[in-house]
Length: 447
Image (cartoon, rainbow, N blue to C red):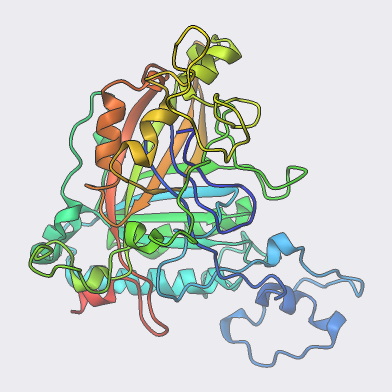
């Protein structure tokens, strides 16, 4: 948990390690920092002298009068991530401050045809919203006046999706159900699903606007199975760029793989051509080229128990200093941890069961994931105990080589395990990005 997370700075770095889970982060997102959204252009046309002409259904979207002294969007609001591309957005995009996860099951009687029509609607809506445009003729105006705000919408398929659409032969072996773990206390009603959507943005209204649009687009084709809300620190909230902290107060994400790593794509994305076709037969399918697999876990933090520990005890559980994320063996956050270093009494400085020790890729045969989580807080129970923790999301080319081996090792002796509880789980195949004019999943549903 603490040794793999995403820097909250707006950089293309990724993170690794989570409360009870493994993982890495994203490549640089394609942003238009200097661009002004279509919403903003419409709202300031009078002030700038721009004439937009026939803008279709969006013509009256920002009809409210604008002041002649209207100022342009801040850089936060104007950042735009491209919908079309080699990979879907929301994987290597820097972590956003607000997030929504939602899973759907296809409605009774809905099959491949209905699923294709739904993904076509969803893709068109995502493209519009990520460009800062209204969703369409039924736009709710929730995000009126806002720019794209780094909005991303990402789509995935669950194990059950393939049987319900008559595509069982196209289901990858990497999507086989995750094994049981001793730390699991899973609620089946909040786990898995036929379809999964991840939404992230740096503005809460922009994120909710996308969530509502996705839910409305589902229509009669699919029903909501579960939905979760998350958050991270807002960009620019610290004096200088820093790796994010989780709700335990720990710097979380120091060892996330970086897109600049030579083997980043190999570890995180499904290759266009398998290295060994015979070995990969029936495992990787052409429709998954440039895609990734997302493991989603709702990990509750037992904060009342955690906060009773002294800072020193918390640091020994994690293996890093709480103040700056540096390893207990010294240096800065990015200093390599010396796993063999001992104190004067001959005891290991980083305990044998410290979370950071167990999750290190070099202690797990090189297993790596991009961790891209959100924190969550869903209130307090009658005794004042917080229902809070981490919406753990990790990305990898193969979960059997990424998440699973690390989680098994954590199961066998992670000091953090007594302070967390895995309450929901899902595994989703996230296909590659849609080319211009395509919708996400088209190569699967029309192949």
